[in-house]
Amino acid sequence: MDNTAFLNYISSYIQLTSEEQSLLCSRLKFRNYLKNQYIVQQGDVCRSANFIISGCTKTFYANNEGQEHIVMFSIENWWSSDLGSFITQTPADFNVQCLENTQLIQFTYDNLEALYIEIPKLERLFRKIIERAFVASQKRIVRNFTLDAKARYKIFKTTYPKIDQRVPQYMIASYLGITKEFLSKIKSQVINAS
Amino acid sequence: MDNTAFLNYISSYIQLTSEEQSLLCSRLKFRNYLKNQYIVQQGDVCRSANFIISGCTKTFYANNEGQEHIVMFSIENWWSSDLGSFITQTPADFNVQCLENTQLIQFTYDNLEALYIEIPKLERLFRKIIERAFVASQKRIVRNFTLDAKARYKIFKTTYPKIDQRVPQYMIASYLGITKEFLSKIKSQVINAS
DNA sequence: GTTATAAGTTAATCTAGTTTAACATGTTTT
DNA sequence: AAAACATGTTAAACTAGATTAACTTATAAC
Image (cartoon, rainbow over all chains, first blue to last red; front, top):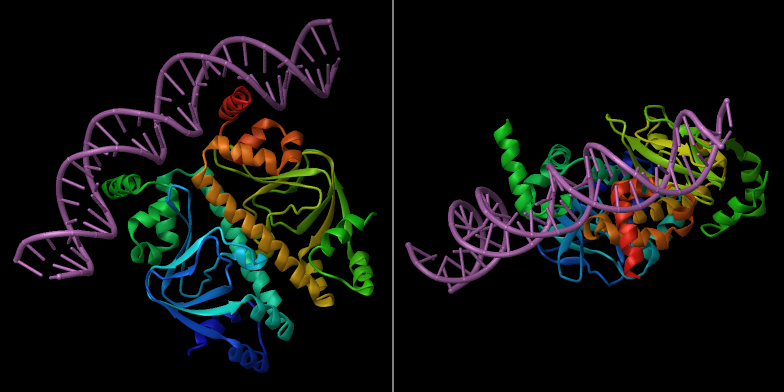
């Protein structure tokens, strides 16, 4: 199993000694999922925090009418879980499903708690990771309030060009909080305007 | 200066030794702001993470037309900052303004970095605090997508009854992402329906 | 290579929420 | 207590985006 992507990712947040690195690596559990498989299901407890080595997932909420609302896409070098369920070990609000065959590093709750004790620097790592995720989430809330759908779509396309190309358009509409029909309309406007 | 509220708040996340507690307390800086004073201004670097002892603040974004969009209200026992600006020490996207006379504990960036080294458990504290904040933020994004304005208002009222009573209605409309006129209409519908 | 099935587009009709504007109430200042 | 200003309400006209439904284009299955 190839740890380099994960170690490289970590190194932008904290510096580990080579002992810490090898200890950490000895604890890593890899797992493969197939396209369409669920990593987490709404109502189940989310048992692991998942770092994506390859592949792509969507995190979504399904309401009583069965409509899906996508909260997040995750690709290589990002996390994919229902964090709320994971940290409290209570039933998940969200589903996490693979959009491609996906390879993950999985940290179970107990595993991660033990790792925090063995390698205290990881507290800092995860603090910093979540700080960034929180900031991005706050900014998204503001964008949803201040910008109309066309502006939001343009930002999405430039911020996540790789996701835009890998994922069906109706899921992008769901992520943006609009219908696929309206996204279609926006796209034709964007093209005709240029 | 009264540390009890802060120590009590912390104790629901981590257990400090009495040495750690007194060290922490010796480092706390209190500060008072008057109603309408700015703690952070859009464009300035946010120099401190602020824990509210008493009072109330709003965190908001002002667009080019001068319209305000409220991201968050903060009251006693919660935090009030532009976290994105604070952690990266780059210019703030948001303003933080006092809605009442407000007493804070302020952690400057350098102060907090030093504290993380003196009391490593604080890494865990802030990791946990931000985990919760992130989860709440994600849930708010979903609510904004899945619920209409009336449902969002009802949830706001039951989740934050104290804020609803302390803050002008036009600010609540801004927080909910609707106009004050429409909030007024919703409220009359909620009353007439009951 | 035809038949299903999933994904994307277009257009007409409809609605939640905005805009504008006039008015009402409350609160601070002088 | 009048003036000035901030806050809140109501109603009519308007718009961004939803809904419905018919159609087109891909992709997969046999």
